[in-house]
Amino acid sequence: MAKAKEPETEEEPGVPTNKRLYNFLLVLLGSSLLFAFCYELLFPYGSSDSSPSKKEACDIFSGKWIQDSSDPPYTNSSCSFISNPQNCLTNGRPDTGYLHWRWKPYDCEVPPMDTTKFLNKMRSKSLAFIGDSIFRNQMESLLCLLSKVEEAILVYHDEKFQSKTWYLPSHNITLGLIWAPFLIKSTEARSKNNIQLYLDVLDYAWTSQYHKYDYVMLSGGQWFLKETIFWENNTVIGCHDCMGKKLTELGMDYSYHKALRLVFQFMSTSEHKPLVVLKTWTPSHFEHGKWNTGGICNRTEPFKEGEYTADPVDATMRNVELETFQEGSNNGLRVKLLDTYHLSLLRPDGHPGPYRRFHPDISKKLQNDCLHWCLPGPIDTWNEMLMEILMNEAELRSAF
Ligand SMILES: *[C@@H]1O[C@H](CO)[C@@H](O)[C@H](O)[C@H]1NC(C)=O
Ligand SMILES: *[C@@H]1O[C@H](CO)[C@@H](O)[C@H](O)[C@H]1NC(C)=O
Ligand SMILES: *[C@@H]1O[C@H](CO)[C@@H](O)[C@H](O)[C@H]1NC(C)=O
Ligand SMILES: *[C@@H]1O[C@H](CO)[C@@H](O)[C@H](O)[C@H]1NC(C)=O
Image (cartoon, rainbow, N blue to C red; front, side, top):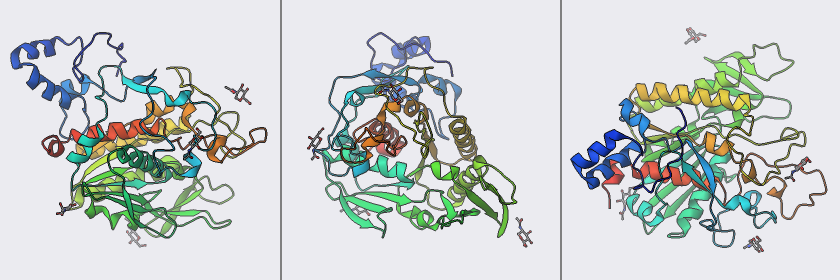
């Protein structure tokens, strides 16, 4: 999709500019009806919205970061859900410029987040995040955003605090975080043994919970880049990055594709039909080295368009997602895309870096975190977009 210029005119939020068709409709239908219509156009993804004119309307994921002096929606003091390694304010990160950027789609405005409205519309609903620690990161952001209106209560956690469930009693809302980093069955890496990955078996951790949720967020990630042995039909068929073993290197995109396809297959054949939202790949921003070779992320401003070089691995994995998403949509699956990849790629300044620890001595060479995100930080935007996507679903649009 070609990138349009940011419209300079003051327009009603959600109404695309320079489209004669819409001006015509404006006259024809009246502004209130048009507004409702365009609201739908804002979110062109999913099986039901397949007409090409809709797709052209506004891609909220295509845009740029613009400076915004307003304060972030919460702080380290107002929100108690932030894990220490992402609590950049408390950990003493000195610069705060990264907190003052707002995502601006080229062709429209995303209406400002309305937490109260969101919670009211979500009354008696449940939402699960199925994935890895990036989703823990995003869930904590969501809990912080919601805590302005209602503080969630932790009602369940597993032994390692990887899977958790929260409840918001005033709104009867359940939020689940389900640890399933591969989405498919895997073993843990033990000493010199690689991770065994079962490409034709789903991870029971989430399939056993799936039926409980009205909305399901889904994502794979960095775990697919690890050394993994691939199993299919009880046979080793190859591997990824298993140097020294006499196995066929099939690649991380092979296992990721198999995993996502199997997940979508399960979802299409399951009786339970929640709305599924696939979140795209999370780019990391290690520079001057890799994560394990002294890489750092010390930028303090977003990239401008064209200023960065994307990691080809990221592009490969995102393509797997887009391809599988398309297959899923074509097969009638109720699936939407939360395409946070590009807007995240532009934010090398949003990571904890050395401030994953409390007041680190930065004169020393320290392990940096250039993958997870500071809270508050750019990842809050993912949730603002998620809330928009959910609220524009037919059943919530009409809810009060
Ligand atoms: C929040 O961060 C500030 C520094 O930005 C620090 O002074 C304050 O103690 C922190 N608050 C909490 C509750 O950790
Ligand atoms: C709370 O939500 C559940 C569905 O998630 C529903 O079955 C139940 O009736 C709701 N309870 C109240 C008190 O609204
Ligand atoms: C799985 O393996 C069994 C026996 O090992 C074989 O009969 C069957 O055809 C295999 N299935 C697939 C899908 O490869
Ligand atoms: C980031 O670190 C690199 C390598 O140590 C250094 O050359 C660069 O000046 C630093 N940038 C900032 C903004 O501190």
